[in-house]
Image (tube, rainbow, N blue to C red):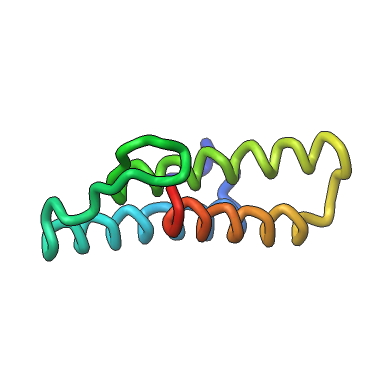
Length: 92
C-alpha cells in the first residue's frame, strides 16, 4: 500500500515527531487559548505556532548547511537544532 514512498525508520520518526509537536501545540492552545503572544528578541509578536514554525524552519536550514559543508554524521546539527528550538521558544 505504501510502496510508492521509501518509508524508513528515520522518515517515520521524523513525521511522528512533527505530528506529535503539532498535537502538543494544539492541545496547549485549546487548554490555554490566546495566552502565548509575546514580543521577543527579534522584535516580532509571536505565538506558540509561530515559534514552532520558526524552530522547524531554522532546523531545516541548519541541517542543509551542515550537509553541504560537513556531510554526515548528523549529531552536530541535531544538537544545534535543539538549541535553536529552545532559543525560539524562550526568547523569540
